[in-house]
Image (cartoon, rainbow, N blue to C red):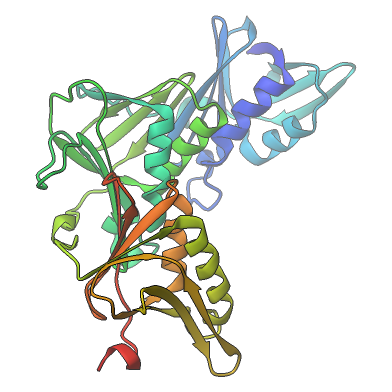
Length: 380
């Protein structure tokens, strides 16, 4: 095998796939990157058995062939190479020669025969979605997944396609995640007709990789192909294939409140800044803050006996009950406010022991549910 390409293209391709290379596996071969030279392109692949990625880059192919190279070593070398033409060639005894200008590296390569190939996803169910929209949907849902190994089914994001069963929901694609303490739901009406109804649970890691690839060049469409055990995301010259999480995702519709006693509309950034300031005190008191509505204003309160206290007052539009007091984990509120793009948000409360609901003002595309914390003041 022998090919020539510019350093920048090779580096971007290697950097993309290296992020999914497993370094803690009992199968050493998946700690490598596969280089495959054929016709006019070079394919760079990695596979950790849960997620696989292929990236095609332009290259001048002198001799077709394939070789495995150690991911960490090869990536480290390519990152430090000068901006010039790079020549990669396989020699006898598995040696891979990396040449540039008058210099070269020789590293030990492996035969690609035992490297796991990416599963072929050919179920016929596919959806094309605007890349920026998909990236935004991922951003607004992936952070709410569970990090607990005991809740494996919650470590992914539920992706639903087709008509929604919820009243008033006209979307044809939804992404939902929960860790048991909060729930994120992002819905969207994708142009064109989705002629099937289907759902799957996609690992958060895979979706994060999809979003990362999109953000490097956010234009065009992503083709999503659904399979029985896998899902494929094709975007330009990159293919990501992920194993699906098997299991029953909770019925999220039962968690979303049907109504509320108090609705508080306020500026998103002003609320976020106040919450972040309160978090300085709350961090010394189990991250607990209290949100109190009184006198037509919103109070953000945190108290840590050994540190001090804070009472932030926020201008807000209050509808419904003029008095309400609920405690929440401050980190869970901050996470949601950072992914809501709209200028104003509405927070809906229904008593100290009922979940809170947060969404952008004037839009039902994004819904965030957060469970309250029982404290002495709210338990009476």
